[in-house]
Amino acid sequence: MSYDLNELRKEIDAVDLELLDVIEKRMAVSRKIGVCKREQGKDILDSARESLKTEALKANAGFESREYIDEIYKTIFEVSRQHQLKPCFGLLGRTLGHSYSPQIHSLMTNEYSYTIIEREPEELDELFSSGVYGGFNVTIPYKKDAFARCDVTDKAASETGSVNTVVFGKDGKTYGYNTDYYGFMYMLRAKGIDPAGKSILVLGTGGAACAVNYGLETMNAGTVRNCDLNTEINYSNVYDICSDSQIIVNCTPVGMYPKVDGMVIDLDRFEKLEAVCDVVYNPSRTKLLQEAEKRGLKTAGGLSMLVAQAYKSSRFFVGDNEGAERIDSAAEEVIGSVVSTLESQMRNITIIGMPGCGKSMFARMLAERTGRTLVDLDQAYAEKIGETPADTINNEGEDQFRLNETEVAKEYLIRSGLIISCGGGIITQDRNMFYLKCNSNVIYLDRPLDMLAKKDRPLSAAKGVEVLYNQRKDKYESAADIRITLDRFEDKNDFFNEAVRIMNEKGMNI
Image (cartoon, rainbow, N blue to C red; front, side, top):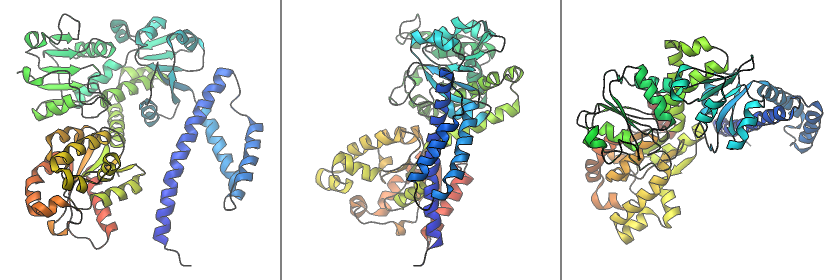
């Protein structure tokens, strides 16, 4: 039997991606085991268990790997212990679900491990006195509870009455800091938004709004007014009282995943508006921000705030208090790099283009290359609706198909980290444009019309490819973050490699 080296390399590349996922899961569980051992006062090293486990693994291993199990697991146990022995910090909340904080902190430093700490209110006293953690970040609803339990607080925490960073000092004291305000200040600076002397409207009055207000004061903002449901300035009178607002900052959860359709305020009612900021970071381009962009306003999203506050927290965690108070340009480069990495990982890669241009093939190859989950919206449509797009068009008409298409597309486009291949006409409906852009880097695959496949494409057959292209090309270009224009290729791998080169040239890092 003759083997094909290139095909074998593809096979081993796929296995390596699977291994990375498994290793990540194992290290995550190992970190949790380390926390449990600390809580129970047990030693990290358990030689007897490691020996028993190695023998059990050898007994279950296949003939190709059995002789290497001792060597492989010696390394695995060693790195697992290293991971467990690191000082442990984390994110304290009540019900946290998925959080990007562990990944953010791991990208910034390898000096400690970082975990999720879910506790009920009655468990806080025990947590603060346990000695298990070196400290933690704090999210809602515990920022004021944390403030009350700290012996020493910084100016930002004292003025906001809110602590989002707790450090247990070697002197036995509990130190509390608020780094959210710095994250907000970084978010504005990174997008060139200067609040000095400006009229600011802050939507919300919770913990995030308190930090934002303190940051605005630090940056010498002019008039700062808060609006909420039941405050003196509320959503019934805000347009009368605050019509002169130049910057609006959303500190409410409106528009946050999964309820991405929400928008808390009508931007057209503010004639002097210059910029809109949103502390929500998922989706990355909220409806509020997209509406602001349409009006030519400056915008800033919440991911950079999340990362910047985490960086300042990380300095306190490692005892670099001077670095936490004096964050220089080099530190801000680190913050910017982490923001870019997370944006790339969080956003879907969504492929649009004419029917038959190769979107499905390109998406499939991207999924193989990156290890991301592939979603072909035509296939997803058939699974959800029970018939193909062509069947719906032929049986019920294009209008019904488009309504169905939006419901299917929305389900996937608001998620994160997928590879998505769209139907050719998804851009024909204005309602789809928000979903396309809210959590995706949108790639427009532009191919010569004479190369487009026409089989099972009733609209191409009925209207003609050139007519469809002329109707859609402007919308493809408007929706796209990156346009890839490629001619003929004899080999699909050459086509793929050139497309990836263009994406990387545009900063995608595939």
